[in-house]
Image 1 (cartoon, helix red, strand yellow):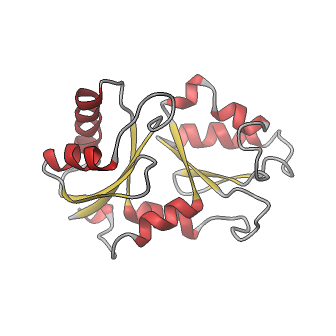
Image 2 (cartoon, one colour; image 1 turned 180 degrees about the horizontal axis):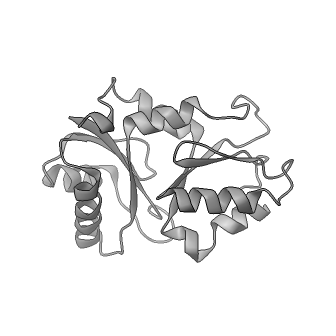
Image 3 (tube, one colour; image 1 turned 30 degrees about the vertical axis):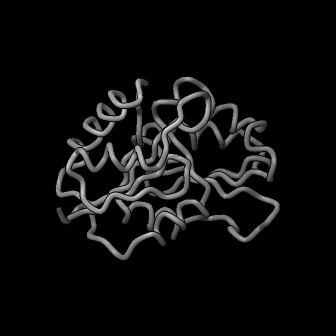
Amino acid sequence: MTEWVALLRGVNVGGITIRSAELRDVLSGLGLAEVRTVLASGNAAFASERSRDDLKPAIEAALGDRFGYDAWIVLVARAEIEAAIASFPFDATDDTRQPWVVFCVDSVTRNELTVAAASLDSAIDPVSAGPGVVYWNPPKGSSTDTPFAKLLAKTTYKTRTTNRNLRTLQKIVASRGSVQDPSAS
């Protein structure tokens, strides 16, 4: 059984509120095991033998039906989050920076963002490609103002990315023991 993490995009901001208990109910109703939420920011972990291609549309449909919005998630295996954390290329202890991990739906999106970032000032917008993600480490308080932030905010990336702070990902991983690699299922 693989442990998955659903990263919901655009919830608990902008008028779409999903309480943790309601999110757990929706996911449990899909027959997913060991469902739990982490923080109140649209993160849910669970175990399932179902494939990513089966789970993602089922979860999005269930969320859309229950909460009345066009739900969109990034679905990642816990092992993929662990790999993203382990590969963070910047100083995660630098209190003057925000350590972001941008999850991309495909390598095309990751490559587009990385190429676009190459022309930006790396002192303001340090960006690096990782395993299925883009790492971004802007100065604290600027994560909506920098050129890379404005690039991420473009409509084309709203359905192709979602980002989490590195510390949030560490809390997601800490919320459970080890799991099976998704390629083994």
